[in-house]
Image 1 (cartoon, rainbow, N blue to C red):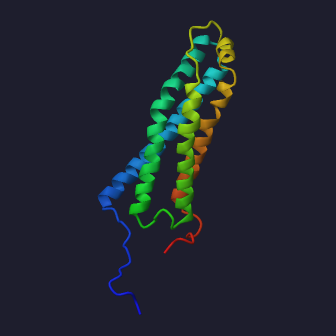
Image 2 (cartoon, one colour):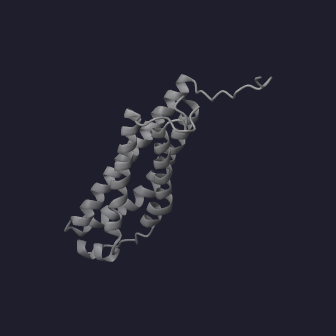
Length: 177
């Protein structure tokens, strides 16, 4: 005997225009984040290897301006639009392993932006005019090397998330209906 009057809750479905708008925002945030990663890597590598003090100063100063302004909203944009797309499309959040892995990546990467990268960049001292590039790097200690990892890692993880979105590998999760 089936339960009388009990209806199975229908999953939320976004209107096609809303879904497409969210998908565009999701893609734009991810692509912009990857672009910021490339720009940061180029700035950091140039500042780390240059013999010109002004180039080293401007590179590290630029990183200090870009990271806290660009990466928090982009990471939240990827996370929030991804969650909304998961909730409002047949892919769901817990139905497919590739979606669940992307959610995990987004959560970890967003947490790392707020809990590790922004504070690390916040430790950059105010750089005054120095006459040698090596003097700038010596003043920063281990920060020039530590700052090289986040843009490389996040670029590779975002690229992996893109591959997951295109190929949609693996089976459904045990929580799929």
